[in-house]
Image (cartoon, rainbow, N blue to C red):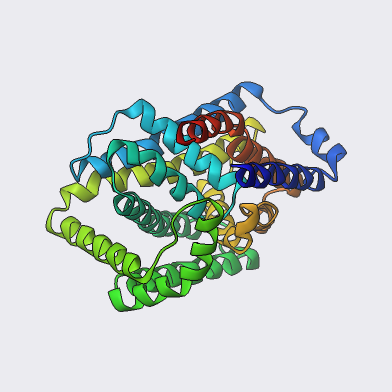
Length: 333
């Protein structure tokens, strides 16, 4: 418990430092946001709440497909706790799923089932990413600015991302390749799990987890109706994310091409993977602003929108998550 508290407060300090660094040009930022529509920003806050609802609905729908009927309210608290943990203990989602496994154990949901649910969440997110990437490319291609070099360059980047995503998806569907990748990740994952007081993953456990994942995949293939609801909820969460960013622009009085906002968000999401230990903070904003400016939006608006979006999406719900996290740790103790 003491170790967890230490890492939590250390993460809060680091996040605070990063916020201060990001606001180095605070005067320019204030000159842009002074005319922001506060009421529309409240709509963004509501959309973030819907994001957590949709995330909860995914886990509820997934678990229901395999006979687990969980009440929405306690599951919502567990999902908020998981997202909070992933934010303040950025470990690529490992810390959050470790906490969620402990929380769902009281509902007699096995650790393997919870882990596989998170694995399918990532897979569904990847598939949603591909669909939205195609839509974004189509909207950009049909715009009247395709002759610009920056547009063509970003379209080439998006095409590369699309091809890479399809290749990765195909490789993960190959069990032999996927298992080798899992084995390579075993050591860092076990290090993280031990730091959170969780059991590390042995070779037999990894084999059992792999068996469970591909058995579940076979169940989905045999009955696609089980697949529909979890996938749609996962797709909805990604759409809500992009809608939140677009609404921030609307709050600034700007109505960009939805394809531009979608492209900027998806590129930022990918490049932020390079900075997993800080939840993509800094890298996410740079990637997003670069694409927005490259596609014709003004730098001051792009920078301000990216910062405001991250404040609302990443930090606004931290107090709520902290409350649920402390309650969860108290219950475990």
